[in-house]
Amino acid sequence: KEKVEITKEQQALMKVIADAYNRHQIPQDVAKKLLQDQYSAEENFLLLTEMATSQVQVLVEFTKNIPGFLSLNHEDQIALLKGSAVEAMFLRSAQVFSKKMPNGHNEVLEDRIRRSGISEEFMTPMFNFYKSIGVLHMVQEEQALLTAITILTPDRPYVKDQQAVERLQEPMLDLLRKLCVLQHPQKPQYFACLLGRLTELRTLNYYHAEMLTSWRMNDHKFTPLLCEIWDVE
Ligand SMILES: COc1ccc(-c2nc3ccccc3n2[C@H](C(=O)NC2CCCCC2)C2CCCCC2)c(OC)c1
Image (spheres, rainbow, N blue to C red):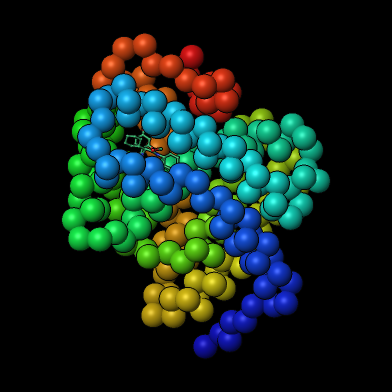
């Protein structure tokens, strides 16, 4: 039986990532807003673009706190952010969706999202992902590391120095693996399962642009930041 322990520098890395992640809390209130009222497809689309815009801004702040990220080639920094923004947004949405709320609130939230204006064909893959994240009952540290690992994916389009990105991602993967063994000793497959979610997350990337343009309304407007980050307009 392998004795797993977190080293001093891994504890320091965990603290840096977890603290940076905890500062990244804004879109939490979107669930509260959705529970308050039923909105039109137009209002929901506006809410989505506002939430997504602020989430991207917060994601950039989180990324800047990943040790070594700011030492990467500048074009590669942009390529990593652009390549991971949609996945990080869906990962965040899954975490918001999975948060236990008072009786019946989770069902209301799901219903509001189902009737928000998103077209039928995308609900199954999106909710399948949300539920597959929910059943894992990830702790904050795991969520933070998984987000950092998603951002530090070496094979994003246009990344020049992939080895430099691998060197940053590896310690995160090693730390997450140890955390999973210590946090979920009764689930030896837990770490592999988490990484499997990242594969499922990539499939949502392909649906993303179409999910937006097929939103049940005319004239979809995006903020300049979202035009940069999303492949729309
Ligand atoms: C591209 O298509 C879609 C469809 C649905 C969502 C979504 N899934 C959610 C699960 C839990 C709570 C909110 C959720 N959302 C929207 C939202 O506000 N997402 C925020 C994005 C930034 C990070 C926090 C969540 C809602 C959906 C209902 C109408 C108003 C927007 C979504 O979030 C990427 C993207």
